Length: 362
Ligand SMILES: [Zn+2]
Image (cartoon, rainbow, N blue to C red; front, side, top):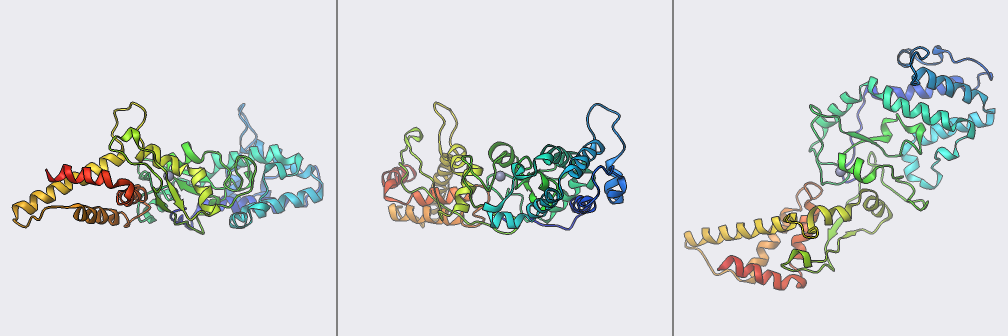
């Protein structure tokens, strides 16, 4: 969302086309017609296999069950299912019109269970055979940096060690027909995928309200952070943090809510956990700034160019430090680092600035 996802031509996209062709082939078949491997193209058919020999259902079992259930539907229900399939897989239109998005409970009742079972299996089992690992390798190489495009607070792992999680933008259990659509799958940081977004529906909140979200293959958001309204203290446990994100648009609110951005800024950067011995990232950064300033003063004294630092001079240095985080604002927590140094310049932090000045000029 903070960066666009990279859309590559890759054989992994063929599975989606094969499934679509299969559905078109069976749309008008007479009821009771058996599944025939020739309903599928050669490559897809090659991965479907034979009847099961083990307890666990394989692709063949699941597609046969789907096939029977689909042909048992009335013609209008079959047509409606194909329409839902086509509409859902036009992912960008779903993002543009979240009120028209159709979820599993909107599918014809006789095909819901079989659809979910088949498509989740195709994602888990078959997509790998179309070499999604190679897709990640190519995305990783194409990407100009390794920062997670959804949070800017974690990095992607090299393809040499790991295939990054691919998140279903339209979550697979709710929108199963888009499970193997690569325009619905985006490489995402592990924290974002496994701890924060998890099973969230980008287009509907937990209370069932429709909401807007940005499709990272098409758009980005450019939120700005500040800490106005926070309370500063030299004792980290006495600080009260207020993280503000603008603009206050519904896309930004959805992003903050799904990826827990405000909470992560507090938990991972600003706040000290009760009674913990850990130094906050925020204090580490301020201490670094303090040490750099002391080194600067020592250098100025050595070079005989030293003029006593006053509050103006300190504020100038804080401003310079703040501006340095404008470069790559959405990498390395820079947005919250920028907000911190901006906050240090406010009236709320005057006493704190005086304390820092005293510390570095003794
Ligand atoms: Zn992330």
